[in-house]
Amino acid sequence: MVAAVIRRDGRILIGQRRRGTRHGMKWEFPGGKVEAGEDPRRAIERELLEELEIVAEAGEEITRFAFQYPQRSPIELIFYAVESFSGEPRCLAFEQIVWERPERLVDYDFLDADVEFVRNLARM
Image 1 (cartoon, rainbow, N blue to C red):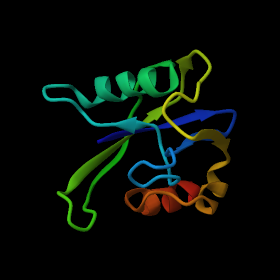
Image 2 (cartoon, rainbow, N blue to C red):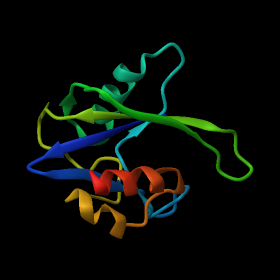
Image 3 (cartoon, rainbow, N blue to C red):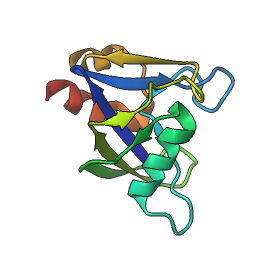
């Protein structure tokens, strides 16, 4: 799994999962699955185009870690910085999207896999 920390004007873009989906109404960073044979950097760029209709270039890898939800296979999450992109993000895959200050991210109900990362990001 890949996810993007998209920054603009001191804020970070987050999305709320659609109601009625797995983990519906939880907050997350845009991104998704890496397809077989796909480079993770290309995967995040593809996902951002599909989810937000923006053309972005994956920056440096921020972190990666493994996480396992109960009764599920473990996943590896890779977070990339995205500092520049073209287009205005559109809410194509989420209930809603929000630009938020990093220190306020802890006020949102994030996916369990993202909680520790969000706490660290809020302190940066």
